[in-house]
Amino acid sequence: MKTERLDEGLYRTVADNGVSVLSETLTGVRSVAVGIWVKTASAHEPRGKMGLSHLLEHMVFKGTKRRSAREIALELESRGGSLDAFTSKEHTSFQARVLDEDLPRALDILTEIVREPTLLEADLDLERKVVLEEISTVDDTPDDLVFELHSSALWPEHSYGYSILGTRESVEAFTAADLRELHERTYHPKHVVIAAAGNLNHEVLLKLLTKCGWFTFEPGPEPAEVPAVPKAVRTEDRVERESAQTHIVLGTDTFKYTDDRRYPLMLLNSVLGSGMSSRLFQTVREELGLAYSVFSYQSFYLHSGVTGVYVGTHPSTAEKALVTIRRELDRLALEGLPPDDLAGAKRQIKGQITLGLENPAARMYRLAGLTLHGEPYKTIDQVLSDIDGVGADEVASVADSFFRSSEHTVVWLGPS
Image (cartoon, rainbow, N blue to C red; front, side, top):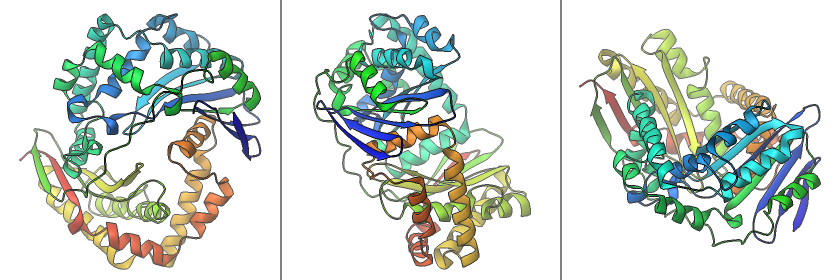
């Protein structure tokens, strides 16, 4: 194994079989956040297997060789801890938040559900119903559904546009054999990143992981690559749905997570639609009273990204809301940010980053991201300095490239 010290109390170890382990010691806490990330998710799925990674994430909690589903649920919760998981577009993650004394127990459980799930057909019959109810929940939540529709409109033939949950048809067709094939192909050390933050010691963490078998597991095949990402489709889709509001998302594809333009884009979104002081909130909600919820957003992936705006408004005011949002987008594209707005956005983003790292879970996610996204390590001060160093010309260039409203894909969801 090769271990490197990245910072005070922060270490990364890469084992011979490919598993990466990162930890950060935090003084003044009595807890640990620990997680296992697997480099397989919806972006690696063909259309016919849409939702399989998410279903596998559910199924590993149904039982292992040594623990029943109930024992998995109780073992940490009964001690005040928590166990959770999620599937994103590019990774599947399993995490625990526990008292520092319960870290060995948490690692044992996490290792077991990741490495030794039983994946029985009888359990699948039950869990399939749960996932179908999850799909129904999204279908009944238009301000969630409209984002799925927008991703599909941007990338209709690429897995970035597929639903993480899958479709009713795909989920109903999956078998336990499908789950076992995916698990046997991907849940291996070369695909795994383990990150922990809190009251822990890196050498002790490595000993616990050795006991769990992580450094002697076979490395497995190389992780699958996400298919080449095509240019996003430019369209305006209207999906009819009976509801009290019309939900609109307009947005465009951008660039991957490690692109140098990430911070200029974050600064622009801060001014445009992040919080009560943003232009969209002040104009669309406060001045015109057109919406309760309006905001801008950005997401970054390994090979692309997206930025856009959401608004939910009465059907009679939807056109006016969209015109107002387009005007604010085009204003940014044309003018960039004046000095005062740029300085204010920098203060806001730096404050959000600093406050966001005030707990072990946030630190854990940051550590995992270093390896998952292939980023070089930077201290918090270096990150804040990078944000301070963003110039008005960089912001103007990004605004001109990605904030022209005529270049945005638009999805409406609501009454005709």
